[in-house]
Image (cartoon, rainbow, N blue to C red):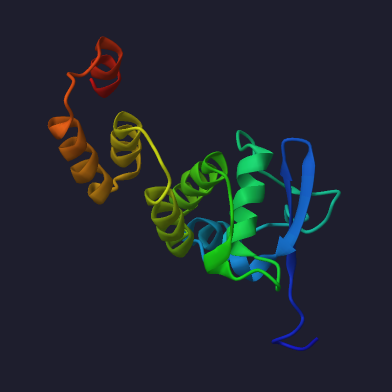
Length: 158
């Protein structure tokens, strides 16, 4: 086996879908790297085949697919020109933050920052994902707008 061009793959089961992806992309995440280092004992390691996939319970397939579009873009797509919906970018942010994919997290924050979003929603997401630039800008927007917070907005913000 060539040490550079014999690329191992991982098989993930997300909801009812199998995804087979190059393992090196997931080695960019400290979470997965640590999991790969765990001793496997005598049993077959999860993620090595369709029969023994690495199960990602609680993860939505649409979010995982969106993350893969960012992590592993097709050769004809420039990473900077990836077009995802706001919900797909939110899925990328959720998974990239959870699994510590720093570059994908930053890209999703940059892309979401350019998309229209309600100030209250931006504050809630800024709190959840510790995005200080969103918090400052959204609070400033709310302070400068002509109308008061609605009861619902106030409840959402706490």
